Length: 171
Image (cartoon, rainbow, N blue to C red; front, side, top):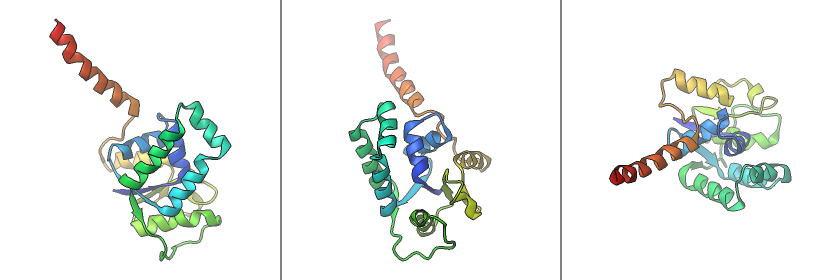
């Protein structure tokens, strides 16, 4: 399954792991679906990450500038980066900044575009543009592999498994 995540979903998912956007970003990191993105979307994300209000959210969440750059690098390496230069849009969004997002969905032939933009993107009425909550419920209805609940839980389990053999050896 190929999915486009709007910038607002990526940012929310990085800051708040237990929310629907956080669960979706975590699921992508665990390779439960293919993320499609374009160069203009990566540049928008880079720009938005440096807005003072957004940057403060990341600092509060304990994320450094290096970890944000690492995330951008991971996007370039792990996501399917599509060329949108020749895409003809099926609909014209009200906000011209949404054109690359829709073009990415079309170029990638993505099944879903997940966004929190109710005013512009969700109001277009395309059936495959959904909210994070809708995407999670549809993924469960399609019996896709379960999306990760909390990314840190997997790390705790792995850490506990590493400690367990040492405890058994001491007994």
